[in-house]
Amino acid sequence: MNKRILTTALRSIMIVAIAAVIAVSPVIAGRQAVRADTTTTVPTPTISVSGTGKLSVKPNLATINFGMFTHADTAAAAQSENDAAIAKITAALKAAGIKEEDIQTAVYNLQPHYTWDKENAKNVLDGYDMSHNLNVIVRTIGDAGKIVSLIAENGANTVNGISFGVDDATLEQTKLAAIDLAMANARAKAEAVAKAIGKTVQSVQTVTLNENYYNPYQGAYKLDAAGSSAAPVEAGSLSIEIDVSVVYTF
Image 1 (cartoon, helix red, strand yellow):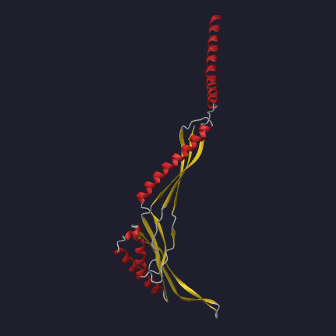
Image 2 (cartoon, one colour):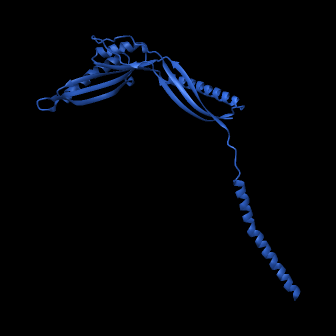
């Protein structure tokens, strides 16, 4: 009888011990996980530099801004007179070989004109002003002066300016070449700095790019009393500059 009681007691003790081990195991595992998460990593050393690539390209197109100003007693009259003049000019441009897609309205403005009445001390309506300005792209630089004369001879009373540029294909090609120069300039700077501190440049981490364009001439183009161009057109050159900010690892 005593043996049975002793056996039963031993079995109970073993069951309690096993349950205690099972209960403690998750706590131990949790503590180990927390310890693993507290490990730190050393950040990769980097160096930040800037680079510039600049190229000059000869413009192959000109944009002429011209317009027509009219004044009349009524809005309809001012608009009608202006529209007729612009239609004549655009027809002449197309006849000279300018494509329709290279002629674009820049400003179309019709507004009342007021003058000051001293006797009654108030503004008085004095007709209507109509302004219509257009941009025309000339794809042969040598023809720009001729086109200005053509515009004036067909009735335009303002030529506001000429700007020069390049076609999309030439611009893209020049930009890519300037990017190569800018990245090479940045790399040379990074290697010089790394060498000074006894390190070696490894790889590029980030790159930021900025584009700039400079035209040395973009101004008014005046007409003489006869309506002809005052001077031949000189296109000069267009400068394309690419700036990069590069972060290297070493």
